[in-house]
Each structure stands twice: as C-alpha cells, then as structure tokens.
Amino acid sequence: MTTKPSALITGITGQDGAYLTQFLLDQGYEVHGMVRRSSLEKFDRLTHLRDQIELHQGDLLDQLSLIRLLERVQPDEVYNLAAQSFVPTSFEQPLLTGEFNALGVTRMLEAVRLVDTSIRFYQASSSEMFGHVREEPQTEKTPFWPRSPYGAAKVYGHWITINYRESYDLFACNGILFNHESPLRGKEFVTRKITDAVARIYYGIQDKLMLGNLDAQRDWGFSGDYVRAMWMMLQHDTPDDYVVATGEKHTVREFVQHAFEHVNLKWENHVEIDPAFFRPADVNTLCGDATKARETINWEPEVSFAGLVTMMVDADLKRVEDELSKTPAKKNKAG
Ligand code: NAP
Ligand code: F7E
Image (tube, rainbow, N blue to C red):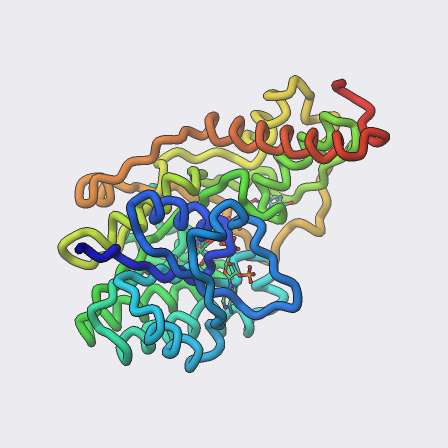
C-alpha cells in the first residue's frame, strides 16, 4: 500500500492557502493546516474543503506550538504562507509584522531543523523586497531595497531561509512571488477593492470608489497559477529560489479602467483620490522575469491580466447579486 504525501500549510485560511489546499488535494496529498486560535472561526475560504483537510492550532509567535505540530503531523512538505501580508498595516504595526514575517520564519525553520530535517520547506518571499527597484525586470539576482516594514521583514525571512539551507542542508526554497490576485483576495488589497466596488456600483449600492496612488505599476498574476509554482519548487531535485511573475506590468489606473469597462461604466464618474490611501513610501513599479522558473521547473502562468480582471469582476458581480437576492428591497438596478 502506498501512503499519500502529506503537507502542512501555515496561513491556510488566506487566499493562497485556499488555492494551494485545492491544488494539493487534487495531487493526492493529505493536507493539514495551521490556524490561529480565535474566538470566532473564520474559515470562509475553506468551507468547500473543510471535510477533506485537518486543521490544527498553532501560531508563528509560539515556537513550541510549531514543534509540537510538526511532531504530530509529520509532513513531507511545509508551505510557510502565514504572514501579516498587508503593506499599510506594516507601517502601523512594524514590530508585530517583524515578529510574524521575519522571526516567524526562523521559528518555523527551527522547528523543521529540530523535528525532521528531511521536510521540504517553502517560504513565501515577495516582490516587495525589490521595493525601489534597481533594475527592470527583476530577477533572482536583483538587489533588494524594501520600502516598507513588510518588505524589510520579508527580506529577513528570505535570507534566513537561504541560511538554513546552507547551514543545515535543509531542502528550503524561496518563491519570490509578484502580486497575485483572485476572487478570494482580501478586500483591502487594491485589485479586490476595485472589483468589489465595481460590482456594488453596478448594482447601485455604492457610488464612489476612493483610491490612492493610481500610477503605481504592478505585475499582477492569478493566485491559482502561483500556488502551482510553490509545489513545483519543492518537487525539483535541488532546493533553490525563484521569481514567479507574468513579466507584464500595468498601472492601478489600467486595472480600474478594465474593471469598469467590463460592466460598461466610466471609471472617471466614480473614482476619487483620497490621500489616506497613500503610503509613507510606496513601491512605484514592479515587473518580474520568471525565466529561471520557466526553464528549471517548467512553470508558466496561464491567466492573463485581462482574464484576471474579468474573472474577479464576474465573481464579485455574482456574489453581490446573490447577496441582493436575499434582501430584494436593496436591489435597485440591473434587474
Ligand atoms: P493572506 O490572504 O493575508 O493570508 C495570510 C494568512 O496568514 C492567513 O491565513 C492568516 O491567518 C495567517 N497568519 C497571519 N499571522 C499569523 C500567525 N501569527 N500565526 C498563524 N497564522 C497567521 O495572504 P496571501 O495573499 O494568501 O499570501 C500568502 C503569503 O504569501 C503571505 O506570506 C504573503 O506575505 C505572501 N505573498 C503574497 C503575495 C500576494 O500577492 N498575494 C505576493 C508575495 C508574497 P488568519 O486567517 O488567522 O488571519
Ligand atoms: O497595493 C496602490 C498601492 O495593497 C498595490 C501584498 O500581497 O503584493 C501585495 O502588496 C498598489 C500599491 O498590494 C490603493 O499604493 C492605490 O502601490 O494591492 P496592494 P501591495 O502593496 O503591492 C505584494 C507582492 C505582497 O507581498 C503583499 O503581501 O496599489 N493603491 N490605491 C492602493 N492599494 C490599496 N491597498 N488600496 C488603495 O486604495
């Protein structure tokens, strides 16, 4: 009898956690997730998968909980996705962000080193590490210049992962993932904030969308494509670090324009600028070169920028319509 491969995902309740869970289940994995204790369980993104996975309590702030968890689950692979992932919050809570995103990675790596050094480890590194970019497009060799406490903490997480690989021979990989989005993206991130607003404006329950820096450029891909890259890194013969990106950049303004055009609305009639959404320091432009991932692990994205925008707007239109159909009195447009 062959046993199933097993994986532990930290951050399983997040956007990528949900897509990775589905992907690993489809590959025949036994999937375990680490969740923080909360007075109210919020597993909305996992509802449809809940009976196929096992959830365990643990916290990146608590070293012993990580060690016990690895002893109990005995995973073949660990995907360390848990983090404080919203850049503006990192300016408000720089120390906590460092605890989660920097020291939290060390705690997870220490747990692997102590419990079982054969565990393969994925660290969720980020294009935010490139920050004030030194060259374009950015590759694995581009120097880092983080522009936020989030980016600075991720640089630490990145290097400590390489350090444990070199010091203790761990199979530890960094995925330097550029922005990736989906209908499951948190509503505070700009793409989902836009598509949610477009749907609400379309149905007449919102009129204005307040945004910050429309000139920022991002290399946006689809989360479903990017979690596949995480898994592919851990299946390769040797551990390494990879940029995961589409190689195309677009401004926030272009995203807005595509999203409103999809429902035949003029964005200029609805979007206003609110200085509250500007950051103390922003990353003005990001564009990744994923040649190494393409040539080494055979990864390529499947969803285009236009495909991503329409996927997200369509999903929000459907969700808002469903919500309104439960409260018909509020529905005053488009049927
Ligand atoms: P997300 O939706 O914000 O999910 C973050 C996850 O981390 C949630 O499950 C959250 O749990 C968990 N978490 C936070 N602090 C924790 C702690 N102290 N202990 C245990 N769990 C904790 O983020 P995402 O978009 O899926 O991103 C996944 C990872 O990739 C993150 O590390 C992020 O920084 C990184 N990344 C994301 C992108 C992107 O564009 N999405 C790009 C590059 C890198 P709760 O549900 O309890 O809050
Ligand atoms: O901002 C601008 C904002 O918050 C993108 C995280 O997943 O990707 C994400 O970080 C851009 C910025 O993502 C608003 O100033 C304008 O230039 O969607 P975002 P992010 O900061 O790039 C990286 C790779 C990660 O690793 C992170 O975890 O959009 N922008 N107006 C706005 N941004 C927001 N949130 N809200 C606005 O109203």
